[in-house]
Image (cartoon, rainbow, N blue to C red):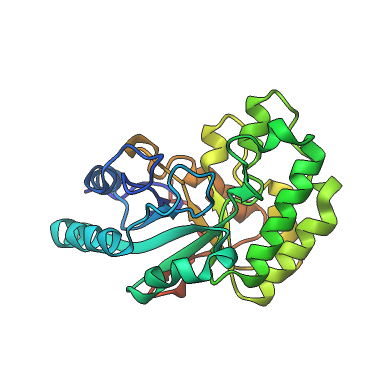
Length: 275
């Protein structure tokens, strides 16, 4: 395979059919990554416990791990496959998540999908005015950033997908600066990476998550750890938008990004592709 002539050759946020909202098999996701010339990926299926979620309690830790192991046996000579998980509001479900942590894990993404029982992706912006919804969401993210047993903070400010669907204007991070800066300080103190999630580009927002201004604040506050992931739920979205996201990070002063192996961060240089 000719390597991708791009910024990066990894994707550390991918979903398979183990996630209730992903129709694509693990084999199809790995095959797509190999076809793109990626060198290393992480499968990070959803584990949600909120009672409002259709996938509540349906993440099978052992089956997920065994599926990754089977994919490694099949594809391991062509690509490195890491085993991860995306835990929603992990600090609220320590006991339920215990079996996941007991198995060999390469990375844990911590995300907020629910504010109380309102789904950010479902009814949050129908129930509350946008400003209040965003304040409450950021409050929940601070809890995850402060108390979650995680390696990466996932898709900060991804609510932009759902405000856009409702024809609401994209938010101005400056309006929430205090809350956002507190989140960034928390993850810097705990050495948690900030995810640069390229799915905002696919959603037509013209930006990854978080907002470029937030990524700039993170850098200014001393944040150096970023993780790059597409959040793909289908094969055709593997690595989509990652080059654009990596270029943005580079322009903001980041010179490396991090991948995870055995829950340990490994730096990879972020360098412009040779033309």
